[in-house]
Image (cartoon, rainbow, N blue to C red; front, side, top):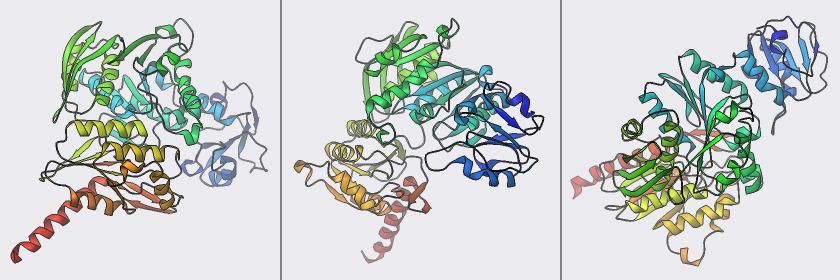
Length: 502
């Protein structure tokens, strides 16, 4: 695509050099630029793309787009100056990749907790109904057998449109996207033509970025207001959690048609008679499109909410409730979300991503309901993230567990001991005897495995699917699941070594 065509829709621009140059790739990361590339300089929180122009040219950039004054560029490099590079990114990305979301039925799911599980539920139901669907979120971009690892819950604008283009190329008709508050605030989903948006819940998280809950709530509002206001836009759909107070706020800020789901408050799609068992949960769903009993392999009321969001979304796509029921009864959960580690022991081990107060509380309450023995929680709070939630989460862990091992979780540049000290500030005197500090995460998990007895359950929280542990400049491979399995092997080996002497 030549540069003139690519930038045609930009109102304010100055092009210095040839506008006929052919653009074969574009990116905001100089390391990703290849020969024929357009490098877009975007100022970020920690780095500024304008500082990496020389590197981009070395990698083959033939054009540079900037919002600042630039030093003299080589004569064969075209310069495009615009007022705001971040704002024009969606226009460039959509043009370059052929406006892919106009060829997909795009569903966006936002909320503090439940985005990953809900997107996977929707993805499964749609695919089971022979509607080829792609998914983008915390874990990956996936359509059919094509899988790519993602770096962010909601990828940057260019990467996101590239993923949508890949979905179309693989014959996809639907796209399901996790939409984070960071992605909304940074404009990553501008230019995405959503047909349906879904809200799960709003609770304490990301206040290091948003400063306060009001700002956090208002950022998510963008997903609803950006649906538009035309007659066509009023045919779009918004799915809201009737049991969350933020839903009424979002409902007033969209012109789209609204369908609600819930358990306690009146809702269009409602779950009744919820029962949690050791094998999952059972409930009845009543809807304007019929009623049905549901049995799922995942646990907890929070997963009933996730299922209701998915059920409502799929009903709006014309899928009969019995088909949705049959699909979700086979849903085995998501890697790292209340994931049970298979062992041959008399105790259970669960790994969960819970990394904010409401998520941790929901996980522990769900576990408690199906545990007859003690609950042992291993938890930490990561560095360079919302510090206000650290004492709150420690209090929740100590309140809903029989024993807590406080440990580290990706401290990044922060002092791990200081993070733990801030966590312990949330403990009161009645928590005096049911916790200990084991700073080394591997040792904390090993300690939990060693102390677990018959019918006990270990809950290891905070990291879930993650496989990297970052402390300062050091990045190590680390999987909670693998540490659990290796700890069990060590125990087994120890028993075998002792047996000849017994």
